Image (cartoon, rainbow over all chains, first blue to last red; front, side, top):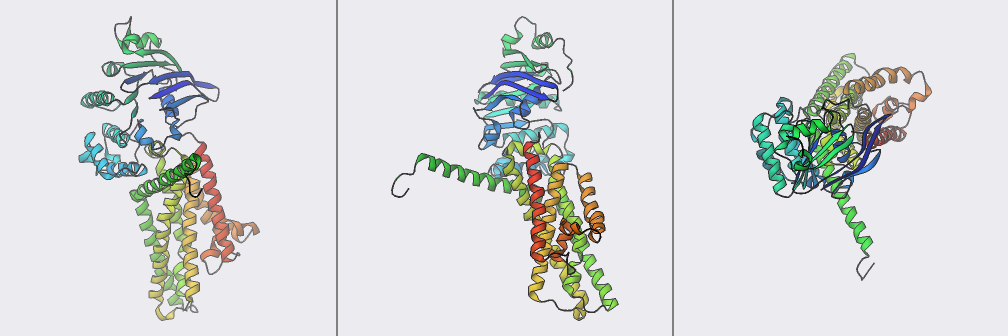
Length: 237
Length: 262
């Protein structure tokens, strides 16, 4: 379970996040929606301990990420790109990540098979397509069989088949009782996948609730989104 | 607390220490795997070794033709260290900068969120690669010089030979750590390599004969660790000065790494 509470992030004189708060609960897929530059990535980066908040808290199971013991078994995170050095093979990348958590090599082969990269595992990451890089990032996130999955714009770079696969995969994760938090600026992809929705716009949460609650009164999630974010189109990051 | 149950606080503290030690061991293994699976690391080490052996052979051949009064095979064989340090600078830079290619640093921090642990493991892993590489470079340089010079070589005592080789190995490994620390702050390979090579091959040698303080710079002080000519400091002082530079650079890079947004 992820709890974000009154998160504020200032960079110089710009306020990127102005009191963002929401939860992502176990057994549910939570969609974190907003136009580009709304503050989605900033929120997730603070959640994962990559950036520091000016104030407020972001907790995983009640603990800040940087204090988690065995973080890979608590949170699997997929940020943009593969997260791997281009001159290493996909398998070598997963092996060092596994080693950092005391996870064995059989598990590396399992996650490679799970994301459909077994055949490409011996190739260098630099030769991977965008979609393969995303799959490698997901494989790394799955290594520790985490209780929570955090994905930033996971459908970027995936072909329609990949998107369909990911959607079913994430539903399956939630069905196993995991909390899944995924950010996106694409509404169509999300409507069929999420249980709960958090809409962020210019660093503030403009709506949150179940899919039905947020969509209520609009003909679709997409219409609701544009109504809630003032017609779409974001400012800078 | 003999003869009774230990207080809960003590048990918890012992558990936390064990967990901390396990975490550090795993981090070291991960960092070592990273280095060993990076082709640039192997290329750098192999290139440095080949260049050092070729230079040792060339220096020895020149010494033999010149008939210079019995330079010892050891001194001739270690002479390439002055050039091989470029390879160890590149090794340190490659190790540090590889974190910043393809967003790997985010994977690293997600897997090892306690940054001081991960940074320490990174330095230890670099030493575990650099020390054996330096042993191979120094020993094969001396061996090649000995083979080429044959009977013409002056003898070096066993004790002095060991001290000189150990000094050369230590110097090269500590230089790799210093270079890695600089590159970890700069985060880009080309400026880091340019600044370091600029110091070690241009500014350092220029200052050496002109300024008294140069004796305390890492390159000139380092001469006292391995060069027959010395750098003005005794061997022990030279070790201390170079180690202090590397430790200070590592401390600065740690402070930057812990504070910086990744």
